[in-house]
Amino acid sequence: MSTTTAGVEPIIAASKLEKFYPQPDGSRIQVISPTDIAIYPGQIIALLGPSGCGKSTMLRMLTGLSPTSGGTVFWHGQPVGDESPNVSIVFQSFALFPWLTVLENVEAPLEARGVPDVERHKRALRIIDSVGLDGFESAYPKELSGGMKQRVGVARALVVEPEVLFMDEPFSALDVLTAETLRGELMELWLGKKIPTRAIFIVTHNIEEAVILADRIIVLGRNPAHIHAEFNVNMAYPRDRKAAHFTELVDLIYKALTQQEHPESALAEQHRAAEAARRKDVVMLPHTRPGGMAGLLEILEDHNGRADLHVLAAELSLEVDALLPTVDTAVLLGLLKLAEGDAILTPEGKAFAQADIQGRKAMFRKAVLANVPLLRQMQQALKSKTNRTLPAEFFQDLLDEHFSEDEARRQLETAIQWGRYAELFVFDAASGKLTLTET
Image (cartoon, rainbow, N blue to C red; front, side):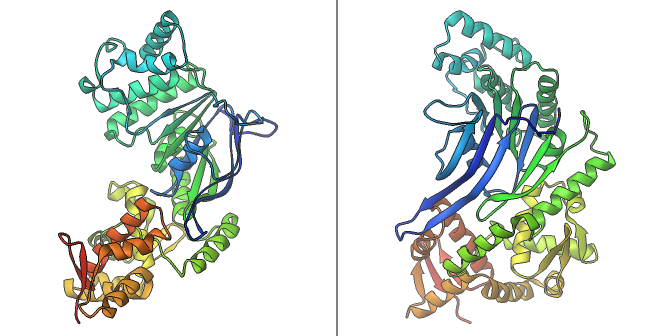
């Protein structure tokens, strides 16, 4: 498939697409900053980014499944109105009807569109055969393995003959071998033109998966989401993981995901800086445990204080989505810095890696009070009380002003974990109360 788009009309194009949630005080939580994105015929597009950066939200807005807060989505040059674009979605969670057979699950979208019985049956059987489920038409989802369930999901999406097939982390819930098999089968359908689909848009956090499948790879930045980098993949199929070009591209994408600044995102960076000032320097905490960060620093110490993140992730059998939050935590606390995709221990990080348990706790306490406004605020609020105790809900209400309800809850859970490890306070889960640790 070609990556050339000059003079080609996009199937779907979004202009200044954004998502935000208005707050009672007139402010808003910006999830996706105004973004332009286009889907061209003959291409597989992969959308990469860390967990929680807005990838799935972007997909849902492009398909019309979720309303936009601003901007316009165009379908063949015309604004999308009441009529939905001819698209289908394959979800990570399979999303099958457990009371329906494989055949009935695949027929369901055709029945919803009013397709006559005979035609509906023929089309469903044909696509079931093409995805390798022939013989399982009468089986129920509970009888199927994870890989077979996802085949049903793919068949159900393809049976309506979508012009654009959207896939939201379709292989992430599967084991490695099954995921690899399904990727190969998807490419066989695509390259063999066995499906009428003209473009595929896949959300993933797996860099190698993106390079294996995609003609274009878009990397999202976060807080709020924005296009941080974009890569054209000019490699013939099937792609060899051991090829020099393959590994070089994977490394470049890793660097884009970990690079703190990017020339193309200067305006977005200014916007985020202004937003942070307006929020009184609210810092979003990566959702990691201190023990995991300590393990990473120990490993880097064994690598003489510096390691290529791509190589390190491969050594640890981790994907970028699992490693980056831990890296972000160490960077936030001043224990690590990033340069050209390499993780480098700072002097403080080296001292942390070499310290005993109590020494690490003391260093962690100092680092979070210096770099995490929320934990400073929690400590000061607890100090202001005569009994040094406050309900956790008090801090939940403060976080609700800056984050969505779900993210505010997760931020508080992370802050409590960090605060307990640093021995700033104790937390009684039964009463839901925090009590200051006297020093």
